[in-house]
Image (cartoon, rainbow, N blue to C red):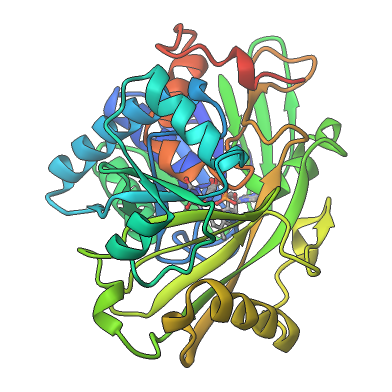
Length: 380
Ligand SMILES: Cc1cc2nc3c(=O)[nH]c(=O)nc-3n(C[C@H](O)[C@H](O)[C@H](O)COP(=O)(O)OP(=O)(O)OC[C@H]3O[C@@H](n4cnc5c(N)ncnc54)[C@H](O)[C@@H]3O)c2cc1C
């Protein structure tokens, strides 16, 4: 069946990227349809696990600072429009050797963009944040505006407001292919064929199934999130006393964690989990639950670096990163088209930006020039 009421824009995938883009287009009065193979928010992609860090002193590259600053404002607008709280400010700590990429990168962003921050040596860290075990030569950078976004609530809120503003959702429906024509694009799903002026593919780790040219550049990396009940000193992990943190324990080995907001202390590896990381180009291969070996690796690590958190395992969740080779985002036209956009702002750090990236993608789909230069994220 071909549906005639053609939308201006079709979005495939309603995780963080697609749901916030859908909302932005609906707010602008655009006829937009969003399609997802599941019923978001769900645990089939990269956007689940009850917490995502938002931080401003961006160690990866200072180029992200203006984008995250715009994202903060856009999250606040969403909170205000929805009458709900989505972001909890806890402050954020980057820990590591003074030469580590994490600490030097966070400092560089903070200095270049004049961000408020505080620097601690190891003794000062031990006094201020006694739950952490830090090496004598480590330093810490504390930024006050960092905090926690609730991913499931952000997505549910964006979809609710988008439908209120006129967007249509097709959920539990898989897109199987598309064809670009000179003046439109047709999209085939398991239930129908649709046509639109523009298509945005925000299908996360499954984007290569719809845009084969993404293979092998976009790889999917399995990630396990762990929740532990604090063993003792539970108050040390209260959100008022325990900022979200990232810590580089050895060159290139970063882990991170969240305060206990009632479900335990959540911790995870960022990218390569020591001895356990899985890279593949197929998203379906990476949803296996946490293994006993992975739990013991994390426990041994907690014992050394965050010993008071090494209590009962309260739960785990498997998720995946969609990685580009340089770990920057991917936002661009699909090859040989001028109406099919692909957006994978992930590589493990995209959630915080989704509110701003929704604006960028809406601009691109409507032929406007985005307020942010997205060329660093183009096909490379
Ligand atoms: C464990 C973990 C921790 C993270 N921590 C942070 C953090 O602290 N801070 C941060 O900023 N970022 C973090 N990230 C990254 C961030 O969560 C991701 O960048 C973001 O969620 C990516 O969203 P997305 O919408 O691009 O992809 P996804 O969430 O994967 O969404 C893609 C959607 O497309 C749908 N789909 C796929 N194929 C089809 C199809 N053929 N037809 C219809 N629908 C389809 C899927 O069902 C899915 O809903 C983390 C990621 C993970 C996995």
